[in-house]
Length: 453
Image (cartoon, rainbow, N blue to C red; front, top):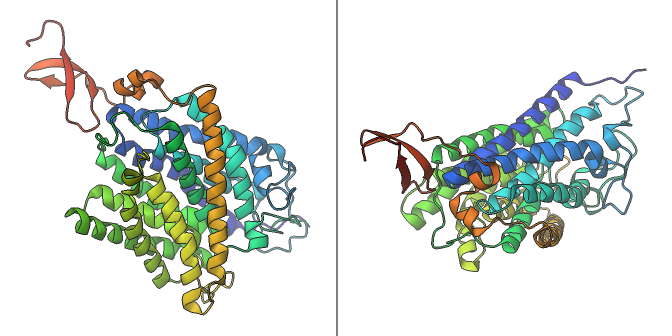
């Protein structure tokens, strides 16, 4: 009998894959708005390039290493799916939830793409584009693909395969990637920021965002795409997807409010940048927990994450590392908060695959399991990322020259600028503007020949 495909679930997974793909351009705009105007194209390209590089690697061997039959104690898959081939089917048609493995592979590809893209926010304005590209290829291979196997590859599934140690032997709960995506990327961002070093003039000149509208646009696209990220991880149009969708919305709302309350108390003003950052912090924190808590629990996760992440932004100034766009405060801390809070707010009342946390009579056991998973991924990612960064730094070099950093990385790395001011008229004179600073404080203009001074 030919395989029986659940068309509704397949359609939802493919739609979710497209939504998650949109998150990478959304992230590019979110990060791009926060950097200097002379660095915006480089930031957009650092994110966009992740689509190209990881997409190729995923086809060649990435999916196989992440979701192939376990080959070494729950640490890494084998090479059975090289070139996205040799996929099993459901030959009896007995599984009512069967979706084509190609649909699942493309859905998981989008997770693999956005994870290294998240890291780029820790190091804008100062790294060589091709060095970054080599890093993405190496990091995806040595860090992301194995960690995805640990967290996302469950025993069984479409075949009799065995999967990763966190998902199976440990039994940690991570519905959509709090560990594999956010803690992983946040720890890597911290390692890169330490190895590559501070921007010129930091912290005296932290660099103001050049386009807050870009930031809010990017955050809104991320919020939209995140419904595919979280609800799509149910791998079906079912009740679990509905729970994940609901909790994603509620936690993000609560986190936005939590961040803004901290800003008001600390700085005296709620900011647009804070609202966007709070929303992303909530999205990060609810990712591992979205199918394992009830709506009230989602509100609690969100407001706690928004407040804690807002408070943690100042850590980089106290400890002296230049995590430029707060990857550590939002993704590492937010991922840790969401993963650990499952141990408190987890409940089996809506999803039998969950576990009861401390507040629902489950004691501390699940919290301990969550902590092992979270800190294992954090330590592995930090150590291996630091080693990869040091190798690239010692060989091809990771950082642009001081001159290129001062003049603008867009021009030095891409021979382009994000904004064309050639038609600007100042004082009645047509002029060409060669640079606009990040803070928008200065415009250097050279009058055209023959124009009035």
